[in-house]
Length: 168
Image 1: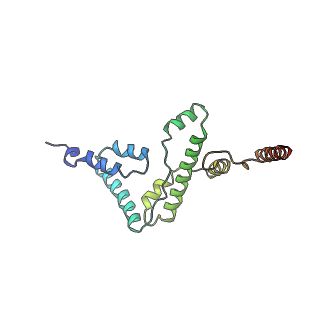
Image 2 (image 1 turned 30 degrees about the vertical axis):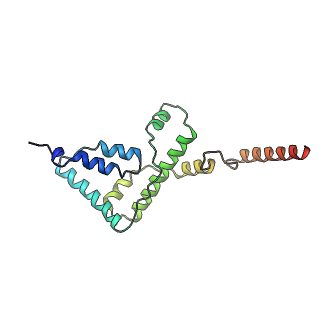
Image 3 (image 1 turned 60 degrees about the vertical axis):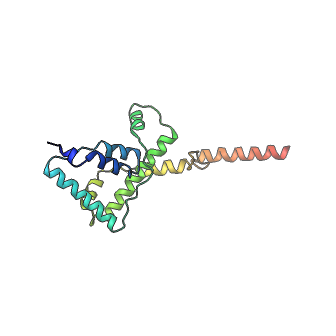
């Protein structure tokens, strides 16, 4: 007798769905998904899918973008290893995504109550986001006005360079 996985061609379904994942971590989760076995878990998951489909039908799109795999970065941070600007930027983007998704589901909880209930567990840290995005530009260079001291140093450098050019 064939297993449920074989009958449903679950591996083919996972491969098809994974091709539409918006991030590598999402793709990995899809490809490693297991079939739910208990009726309660199946009903719960169908409910999530139904709510997500309802949002799509209403042309309401979750604000999802810029998902990086932060597994190594978070492990390094826990071990006290300093993170690079890219890793800090990626963490700030994840926090922003969490906040935006949480706010989106809060506004649309009438359409997706169960998804909203999950979203309340998302961690957000707007002050950290602001600090990162106020410190780095999109190319991850430190902004000249990232702090008063840095702003003063950039101004002094600019004045010195101007002075040197005029002296030549």
